[in-house]
Each structure stands twice: as structure tokens, then as C-alpha cells.
Image 1 (tube, helix red, strand yellow):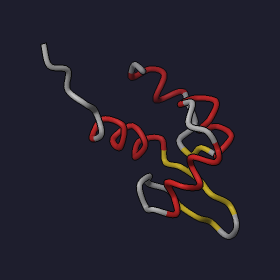
Image 2 (tube, rainbow, N blue to C red; image 1 turned 45 degrees about the vertical axis):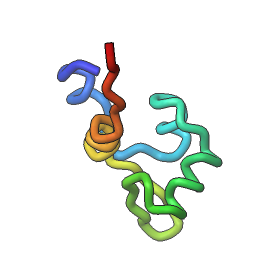
Image 3 (cartoon, one colour; image 1 turned 90 degrees about the vertical axis):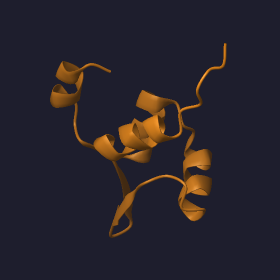
Image 4 (cartoon, rainbow, N blue to C red; image 1 turned 180 degrees about the vertical axis):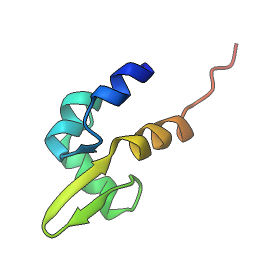
Length: 67
């Protein structure tokens, strides 16, 4: 994702948004939240993901290719 896309996209994502944009299924999101494997916020009963935190989380879990 380039910088212009980040600035024009909304920062806080719902579980549906995370699925649509990153392809992480809602049941997998729930499992990762329970295991504290994915960064999230809970506002009342609503789950929200900070796009910046998700991008950092993805980068930190990157597997380097060996050639």
C-alpha cells in the first residue's frame, strides 16, 4: 500500500473492513484476538483495528525468503 492510499483510507477498521482489505477471516480474527496475537482495541462491545498497527504487525511477522 502506498502512502497516498494510507492517508485517504480510514484509520480504524471493523472486523468486516479487516477481512475486505487484508483477507483475514472473521473467525481467524477472533482466534487471534483471544490469543493476543493481533493488535486491536475494544470500544464498548465493538472491535476496531488500527490500520497503522495492523501494517506494523504484518511487517513484523514477515518471513524472509532464502535463495
